[in-house]
Length: 377
Ligand SMILES: C[S@@+](CC[C@H](N)C(=O)[O-])C[C@H]1O[C@@H](n2cnc3c(N)ncnc32)[C@H](O)[C@@H]1O
Image 1: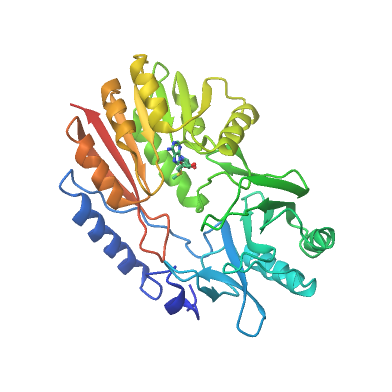
Image 2: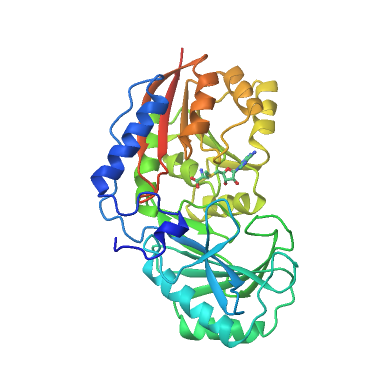
């Protein structure tokens, strides 16, 4: 990747400038340091063609001290924006569309949201892409009122024919959450469709979707192989997002049940099931811990659990109920080795950790994804 002019301020790419073999070496060492007390750590799976891997980008908007509109990323743990014109991690077309959207925002003099006074309109622009060449632009604003909205949308589509849908997301909170709950479709269908592991997945603005599609296929195949599924087994896909892992595994299982707390992701998962002609799946919108407790109370039989929690890991309610249900295998897909380690301290009292496989989903950063297989003792 070519040297990024803002890498020292931005902090997004902790390993910027390091040769890739060195990046992998550091990730391997870190994985071993944190996790080797549970089991041997396999060699990390790297990424061959690793520039521009991100299919989702969010740029925050603000005024600088001269009242010029700037857009970029927050410096880590702050609300100071580093202006970014082009990010080497992002899909190149996303960068081009982002810069075109910014020009339109400037030309139309759209009032930018000010965090201190909570006045103004536009907070952030999110762009997502798919491997089918579809792009989604999400304009995040403080209220539904958006001056010159029709003209902005018309120009976005006119200058960027790859954009298949434009959505306005309303986020009136003063928190650091990027998106609010309400979406207004301004153009197109309000979603885009990606292809992963031979299936189609519909992605809405608020649903989680893995940002590195090529490595996701490797991750999912590794996780599904670890399940040891066959057509007599029932799989629980916990923290399932839009149902991606479970639906990719559905052909090898008797039945899959997905649980996820984000209602828009569950809606996508149910549609994803239909568009892929999958009949042996069901999806539940619920807190995973609460749902696991319900299953344990009802003595529901589950053979295998795949759990893919957010960065904070799984809570005690989820884990205690899961071990009560005694599935044969648990496959833990983690995006944070610190919380993974904490969760494994509890789970390894009941399950033997039999394999740990790190996967590099986020080249140039210090983040590591990990697949852990546990078998009932
Ligand atoms: C790391 S993502 C994984 C999603 C999916 N497995 C995938 O690969 O796309 C974690 C998911 O957990 C969901 N989530 C967060 N907290 C949850 C909870 N308490 N109960 C259920 N789902 C939760 C998030 O909305 C998100 O979709």
